[in-house]
Length: 411
Image (cartoon, rainbow, N blue to C red; front, side):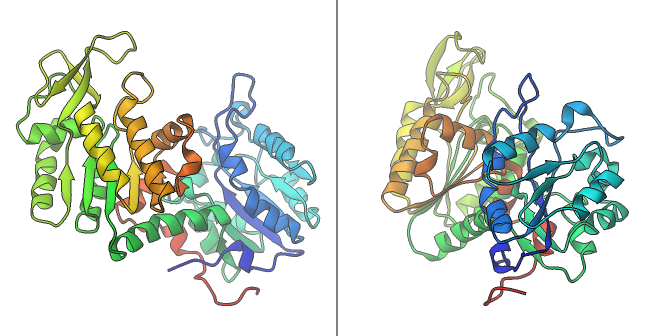
């Protein structure tokens, strides 16, 4: 069911405790190197402060030990960058501990329309452990809980599960970004299945285990599943094909065979690469050859081949709904990025013609952005692990705790 959003709640004069995912990369000088996860929350932030809400932002950054303050993982650079993105608003930040007396005073003194960022939640080990006591202490800061952290929505950290539970009857709502992620990743599958148009899933990447659940969930719901990336070679091995030195997850060959058999008994076509761009090593200078069918010893498949790329492009250009998770090859090492670039362009073309396209997965999203195609997709997800879990049909406890959508706004 759809969830109530922050825009449907009266926030003036109220403290909004918003869980964001500001786990952003920092450069060598400790400044934010990529602010996409920050900038994508601006709609929610501006909705709250623009209506007179008192906004308290909470997040984690990196993987601290959970034993207290670590200067290298402070959220201070994030607060600085948010202040630069919102020069017309007051953005405050407090010190070394999100539960310190200093933090409590800062929350108490927050004025309407101001923003406060608390220190890294994971400086407390109770965050990762889902500790209820830690969550109750955070709950005292807020009158409204807003979930705007899709990239971590599949986790059970305290700020995602125990915290909204601890806030009792307070409004618990989705942020603008979370609502968009849920809408695209659930409705794309539901509408694609019922709409009658051609529905294609494109799955790649390195790990078979990451995609087996998605294949199982999508079987019978999509018309075609196209497989690529290193994971494809375990499936090809299950079919008895020689794969040379390509990546093989031997313990999962039987599971791959089971997926192939399930597809054969379903209305979904499961298509594997017919040819491969191969190299001796994963380097730019490695010898390269195209192998059709079997791959000789000493060579490894590092991208889908031209025949497979042409087949995949043809299918994708005719699709009316596409969900994509995982590159077709070693996209960070040319020339093994060609297959991924070709399918990305095909999906963009289909989207231009009216298709709905949803891209999930960090590597895939980064590739789409690098190709300059991100604005030609219906939706590029911010959460790799979370988007994959949704393709697997998983439900998130953190989302289930939010209020269901209501017909009228305001509380």
